[in-house]
Image: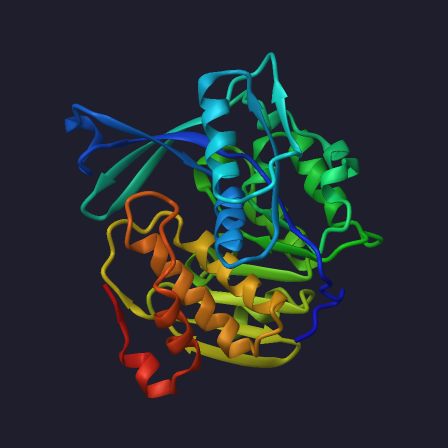
Length: 325
């Protein structure tokens, strides 16, 4: 499969903020919680962790505060096999924090990240040694929302003369865009990336109800060599040039949906980097997403390797009937 820039051997470099995360234990509304469990949460580090699970060399580039949360974040990601040598420690700004508020109709997230260490990132992080030899640089639409410096970082990463291909997960977080138009910022950024992942629902929220299906998203974003449109629990469609490849989602017993999109991105990118056919890369995305759906945290264990290999190779009918418990 080709993108506008050729994928090559080397690490995937994931750039973006990771925060400490507090969630009720046991899961339930935050208003009623007596205990909170400390975890970590960050879209780009989630991708890095799942890439490492798949045996793909991964680096996470960011900044954390010189505080217990920052040390916890760095240690947890390093323990997952991710290279964190490109992570800065900011002596003056704190590590970001989020609180999860699970409810019957979904999980609401409360952010405490204004003025965080990662929000002070600037384009110069792209000049660091962590970017040397990158096979791919992975970014998300969260980063340009954090500050003008972070927006400039993403703009520079997507410059036409960039030396590495870029994958971009639109990852629209409405709470981060108060008073600004996410639609006007995220569309041109996405259209300049080599590989783009976006949910059909978030594309509709961003760019209008005229977007009714995956094909209409492709018409809006013709630039990426590879565009993946995820339709929730139904299917995911990958466009490679004008060709479309659709793979149904798996049936999964869901504990919490947060983090599933990042897991899907990592699985799909792993498939591309392993030069799998596009349908199998999509299957690997779905299988990795199941790992996040089955746990309350953002990162969960991959399915058993035998199950993983079997489902990648199985026929379409068996795939559609599969359930991940």
